[in-house]
Length: 81
Image 1 (cartoon, rainbow, N blue to C red):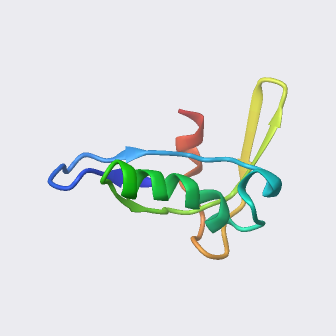
Image 2 (image 1 turned 60 degrees about the horizontal axis):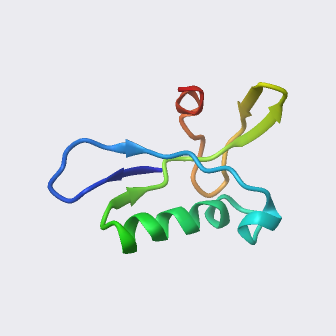
Image 3 (image 1 turned 90 degrees about the vertical axis):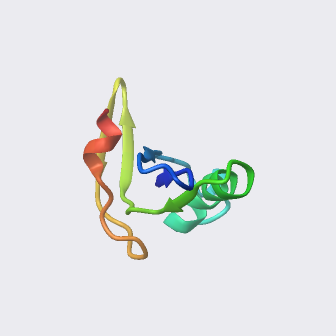
């Protein structure tokens, strides 16, 4: 999720990961919804969901792959930062 305050040209980036039971649904929109609502309604940010994918966690490693049918492929490199 790319977010910025009105009047600010710099963006903050957010990555959210959740299982279907944690976020209430199977789709990337379900995962993004709580963070998008907090950023827009509570903090006043302008937001864009820039894509999606999958994150598999194994030991001290995260494998990022895939895409979202609704949002396209996310910027997977940002997850590793």
